[in-house]
Length: 393
Image 1 (cartoon, helix red, strand yellow):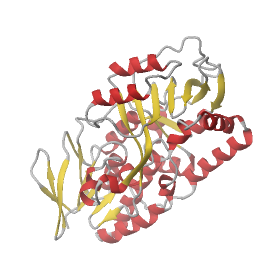
Image 2 (spheres, helix red, strand yellow; image 1 turned 90 degrees about the vertical axis):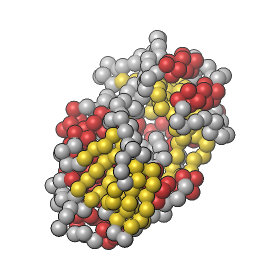
Image 3 (cartoon, one colour; image 1 turned 90 degrees about the horizontal axis):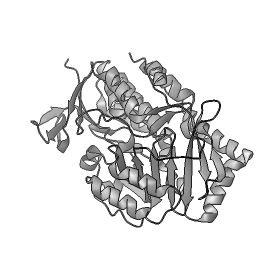
Image 4 (cartoon, one colour; image 1 turned 120 degrees about the vertical axis):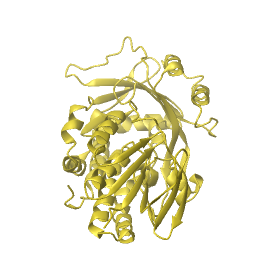
């Protein structure tokens, strides 16, 4: 019996993780990625709690991830005169293990490269359901039929758009955007590392805006609210202009941060988005990671991506060729752990709408009881659903 042919769109986190599990467990896996290679850099992502650690161990990547982990970073929220208003502890921001997104993607690619065919600089442009499988058209190569097509291609997923419906029907935002920029901004006069080695970042809020500098989450992070998305998602120049307009009259060190962002080679801007999917599967299609259950900067996306990849692979192996049964089981099992992705939005927390709400957010971290409650809730969400042991290799 021929190995089931699986096409995975996307080679960031969920895609290589799924390729590693399926490729080693009897599937013929192809991964297409529109970028020319694994994208380096990006902001730090994190893992939290026993479920995430257990999964990294089963994958055989825990040691590699720990070898590349970044330092815990406290966020000091300051006013225009650098006076500290609140401290957001690194344990809350960075979980148990924090690592740059690009480093994690590289690790997962290395652990899956021998078990899957990777095709970079390619993307899906059309799909048509066939009697047995899906006929897929590509931008630069001949069409091909696959038994299954998996969208692991992020919040702007082409697989989701082609197979489930337009993006505006599947994704929502509350008008918040974020940008990550490389480059260095002077923090003269500010303490950037504590005596115990812990790194320190500094955040400055005005209503609807946050500038965060230093630390390893990102050299410069901007979060802001805008009435409409006045930029072209495929044009970096228009993204930079959108960012500058949003922060044009912001004080503190924002002008220097914008100056660094103008020339940073590592620059990314996007909407803070949340998917609103009632199902992650349809016939021979499935969504994994942000394509199905995104909540940008919500703190759970990377862990959910790895859990989803493992559960989908496990159900496919367990079903022994009954793909429809496997996808239905994946859908059911992921409904509970992805609940956190369907609630909340990081925008109002990071960039509160008024000075009063900024003070309330700061008070939350200054008050030990409220802070411990929030930390307990995030721990509970991260470890709430123990993953099955599918006995995968």
